[in-house]
Structures are given as structure tokens and as C-alpha cells.
Length: 239
Image (tube, rainbow, N blue to C red; front, side):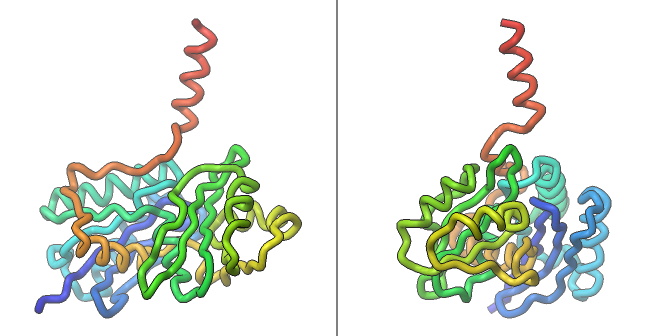
């Protein structure tokens, strides 16, 4: 039986990451967190993992993309890249919710997994997850909320919680002062986005029938961009 090969892409946050994985191995991964724009780094990273893996891009079976939420610019760059490759090579795209990919980074954790991404405006992008018999289970869907709201929601689970994501750096002090349940923070090598996790989940979701034609792929924004909000405010003032 032929083993599927998945190209994973994640440019949803500060980290840019590209990887190639199959059902048994992470074949190659390139991840940077150096504040360069994703438009500068993403395509060269993909070229590098393809080159170093020894796998031709045409041999990829699907492209798994961290579809959002996250940085509007980062999501647009990732989405355009995945669509472009998918359309050029006639390969399907698998949309992996960004927080699913983050949560899967700590899939060996026996407890509640809470990824948090800095959404600015005093909010975080977050969700609540747990592993059940090797499967990632979403207990609370992705959303943009105040950190206090997600901490209150976590209070109802009688299990240890692990926090991870770039939102930890922003919200650590609040969590340490106010969260009353047993918790920990993921170590730094597991705390940020990884295209390898996106690729592995992409393979799982592909086999669950969740792939789509590249032309149909759209990012998951969860809320309006700053430009859209500012435009609406201007229109309100004109009325």
C-alpha cells in the first residue's frame, strides 16, 4: 500500500514553518521565529524542505495548511501559498484549524490542553482539547475571547491544564496570579506552531474525508480584520 506524503504549512502566527511528513515519519521540517515577514521566508522554506527531503513536490499527495485563526496577513500568505501549489499540481488542500495543530504539539499530555494565541485587543484565540485513545478531541471550539473568559471555562474541568502558544508570553502573569486549577506551561520547544504537527493532523483529517479542492480553500479568520473594523467605524460616523 502506498504511503501518503503531506506538505504541512503554518504561517498563522509569529512562527513560519514548513514540513513534509508521511504516516510514519517527519521527513523534513524548517521552522523560524526571527520576525522576518512570512512573505520573505515561506516559499524558500518550502523549497528547502522539498530539496532536503529528496521528495519531488509533484510526489506530495496533499497540502495541509494551518487555516486559522491567527495573523490576518500570515493566514493570507499561507492560504495563497497552499492554494497556488494545490492548483498548480492539482493536489487537494486540508484545512487544519490552527489551534488543533497547536494542541497536537502536546498530544502526549494527560489532561486538558489549552492553546492560546495573542489576538490583541485584550483577547486570545483559544480552544479546549483533550486526547482520547490517541485521538485529539475538541471540547470547546476555536474562538476569540478575553483570557478571563477561557480561564473561567477551564475551571469546570477537574484535570490539570497545559497552556501553550504565543499568548502565554502575553498572558503568563495573569494566569499565574488568577488561575486556581492545577496547570503548567508547555516547554519552549513545544510551545509554538509546527508545520510537522499540521502535516500529521492533515494526514489524519485527509483520511477522515476532510480534504477540499485547492480553489475552495479559505482561511478561518474568526473575526474581522482591523481594516474592516475601521471601515465600519467610519461608515457609522457618516450615518
